[in-house]
Amino acid sequence: MVTPERRHPIDIAVSLCIVAVLAVVGVTVWWFSPARHTSSEPAAKSAPAVTDPEVAPERFVEKWTAASTAAPVPQTTQTVVLTGADGSLVGRDPATGRAVWSYRRDLPLCAFSAWGGAGTDLAVAAYRNSRGCGEVTTFDAGSGRRTAARTSLADSTIQLITDDGYMLAQGPTRLETWGNNLVRGIEYGRVDAPVKPGVQPHEGKLCLIHSSAIAGSRVAVIERCDHEPGYRLTVLGATLDKDEKVTQYGSSIISSGTTQPPPRLIAMSTSGIAVYDGGGNSPEPRGATIRQFNSDGAQIGESTVNGPLGPPIDSTPITRGGLTTFWTGTGTVVLDAQSVRPLYQIPNTLGPGVVMGGQLLLPTAAGISVRASTDAHEVRTIALSRKDYHGQTVAGGVLGGTYYEQWGDTLHAYGAAPIS
Image (cartoon, rainbow, N blue to C red; front, side, top):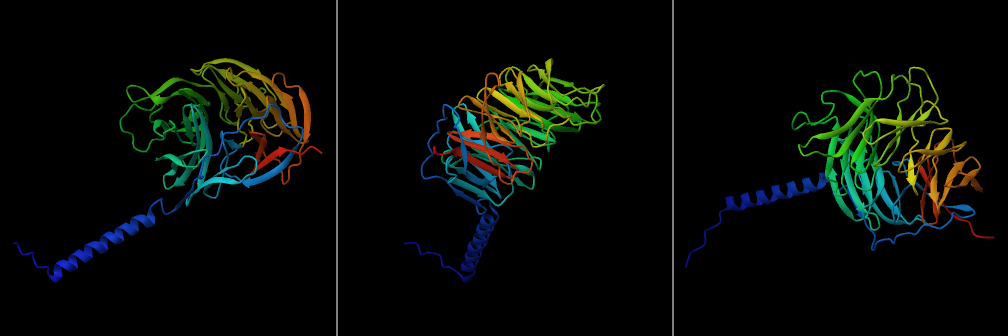
C-alpha cells in the first residue's frame, strides 16, 4: 500500500492562489466580453412569410411608428420589417409593429439591412468599435437567431448594399464584400496591413469612395484618387481572383472636374450600370443625365433628366418589382432594373417610389400617387397626412398589405383603412 503524500500548508496556499487567479481572470474576461454587453431575445417560433397584395388599397391609415435611425429606407424581409436605433435591431410584425425578436449591443449601431435572395432571409447589423463599423452579425429574419458574425477594420460610417449573392459594406475610404456566411470576398481601398503587394488596383494612391453598387459578381465604385482631375468609375470583382488579387474589369475618369457634387451610382445589374450625373463637372455645364455603362464600365448611352447638380445626401435608390426608382431632389426617375435604362420620370415627388400589387406608389405633398408601373399614368391619389414632416426624403417600402415610409429617424407603417 502506497502512503499518500502529505499536504503542506504552502501547497494548499499555492492551490488557493491559483484558483483565485483563475477566478479573477474569468470574471475579467466575462466583464469585458461582448457577451456581457449583448442582449439577444429571439422569437419562440419563426414568423411566417408574408404574401403581397394583388393591388394597393384604396385608402391608408397610419397603424404604428418606430424609431429607426440607421437605415435610409424601410428594410423589409420576407417575414418581418426591421428597425434599428440606440444599439438595438428589432424584427417587427409588419401589421402591428410588435417586436417579434430583438438584439441589442452596448455599441453604436452604424447600419442595418435586410438581405434576401438565393434561398436566404437574413437581417444584418453593423456596430462600431475602436476599429470602425466592423462588428457585423447576421440573423435569421424570421426568428432573430444569430447565424454568423465577423469583425474587421472598417470606416466609422458605412452603408450596406445587398444583392442576391453578396453584400457590400462601403465607407468613404474602404469597402468589403461578404457572402451570406460573412466570409469576406474582397477588401478595397484603405487596407490596414497588406499581406502582399500588387493586390489592390490603385495601390499607393489615396482614393475617396463616393458611392458604390453591387450586382452578381461585380462591384461598381465612384471614387476620386489623389489629385486626379475628375471622378472615376471603377468596376471590380466581388471575390479575389485565382492569384488572390482584386480583379479590375475597368476604370476610367468620367468627369472633367471635381468642384461640383460627384456623379452618383443609382442602379446596377449583371448587364449594366446607371449613374446620375448633375452635369456640373463637365467642360461646359449641362443638364442632369442618367449615364449608362456596360458591366466593364464603358459608357453606352445617356438620357436627360430633370434634377439638380447633386441629389439629396439621403436619397437612396429602391429596387422592387422589376423597377429601380431614384429621387433627384425634384422628381423621381424610374429605370428598368435589368437594363438600367430610364423608362420615365415623375416630377414633384418627395422621394423614390415602390411597387405594391403591381402598381407604383410615389410620395407626394398630397399623399401617395398611385401609377401604372408600365407607363406611369396616374390611376388615383391616396390622401395621406404626414405628421412632423419637415421636408426630408420620403422612402417607401412594402411588406404584405402594409406600406411603410421612412423619413428622418422614424419608420411609419400604414395599413388599409376600414371600409366605412
